Amino acid sequence: MNEQRRQILEMLAEGKITADEAERLINALERERLDSAPGAAPRSKPRPRYLRVVMAAADGTGGDGASRLNIRVPIQLLRAGVRLTSLIPPQALTRINAELDKSGVPIDLAQLKPQHLDDLIEHLDELTVDVDDADTKLQVFCE
Image (cartoon, rainbow, N blue to C red):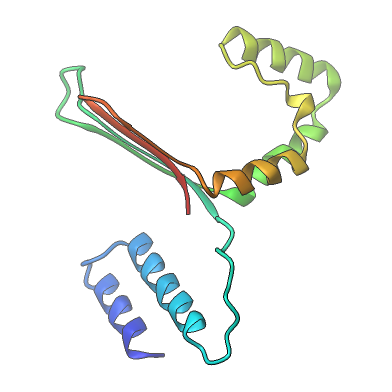
């Protein structure tokens, strides 16, 4: 184990950084090591592994302060979900689509295909959404 990796793990053990931060640091070290290897070919950007949604909002409900949301969804989970839609009986799909439409989500689950999700994920890699409002900040990005 190299010295930098050991230092990152020590900071994690001491509670100075979170597990997510440690993972990002170790991944950055690994990328740096591979990029600086002699004779290494230039690498393309690694495929995203997670879809991250982060929100911070002032709590207008008279609660005890600000609300925070930090969701990290594995892209593999999205792929599995799309594949599972093929197992839903057609009658149930019709009812699910109708309920989604009533709720304001006009998605036809029968049209979801794994190749469509792969195309979406490829484009999401370039996506970063930042919304700054007076009381709310929202970020959606891939990592």
